[in-house]
Image (tube, rainbow over the protein chains, first blue to last red):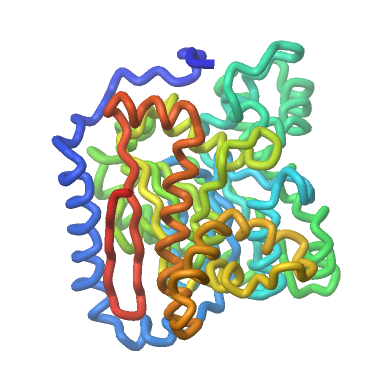
Amino acid sequence: PSIHPSHLFPFPFRRPPFDSMDAAVERLKTGFEKFKTEVYDKKPDFFEPLKAGQAPKYMVFACADSRVCPSVTLGLEPGEAFTIRNIANMVPSYCKNKYAGVGSAIEYAVCALKVEVIVVIGHSRCGGIKALLSLKDGADDSFHFVEDWVRIGFPAKKKVQTECASMPFDDQCTVLEKEAVNVSLQNLLTYPFVKEGVSNGTLKLVGGHYDF
Amino acid sequence: MDPAVERLKTGFEKFKTEVYDQKPDLFEPLKAHQSPKYMVFACADSRVCPSVTLGLEPGEAFTVRNIAAMVPCYCKNKHTGVGSAIEYAVCALKVEFIVVIGHSRCGGIKALLNLKDGADDTFHFVEDWVRIGYPARKKVKDECSEMPFEEQCGVLEKEAVNVSLQNLSTYPFVKEAVANGTLKLVGGHYDFVSGKFDTWAL
């Protein structure tokens, strides 16, 4: 479908566009140079061991939203957190067919890297959560993919609509942001290697919420 | 409190007092909405967060991270995670650039190169996922057969980015925006061994 429900994303404010591809690429290169001279070159004792390998303690799920990079909001340094970002920081249940992207990341983090903690972090004003709450039962999907993806959080939506029926929509979204994290935490246990790590005491699961 | 959780809370407090509270002009408009110019694909590897390596600020880049920064072809059945992110970025947020960034010493790329044709997968998911890059592996095996393994990996890290860039065009909304001139696709590679960052267009 080429028409998308505009009520889900009003954009009265737009940054001025880049003049060109060159300007856009230039900005990335400049950003890298700054990192190189101010961080990378100044901390050889830190970066040298990382060349050989990584041993992160955390696996982090965060939303792809441009405002919520966990390295920024939590001050995570290179080497600390193996990080997955997707719409609404969702962890679907184990499914080899549909969810190899998330499955492979969890598998690698737990079995190869042996992370100690998996943290799933939701956030305020999440467009994916808003889309989930806006789903109309029985209606056709208006996107190719988005509704299908956020439907991972459907049990949380049901819970919120049942328990928070009298709340305004925005307040329901806030509750749903956290309940969807809970669904993801539960879904983590459908991965046998996660379940085993948790039972052994070698792996902990933590929920989080960043309210900007 | 668990020290692992403590560390996250301390990290947040530092961000709050040193960045968030100091820059209300940046953070206030972001409360209402985001209008990032970039969509970035980067690897989940703990060493390569693009916000860190490229100094991307809050609001600049809608960012997907997965193993080996892979973009699979359009598939409603198998790839809704990536599909939904691209769809949202292009159709809702109207980003102007999609940047796919590979990196040195990528474990996912190494796994791709190590795949043994005909052998059973040893992981539940990993081989299946990295196989997205299979056309790049074939190319490297054909064209770089004399190179040592590690060098082949170096080439494959970049060829896999090219496969992802090509796969982006299987999404009709990407193809349309590129044809209209409102969207550009960029490849990148972060080499943390030599301290370099390269970019290119297909």
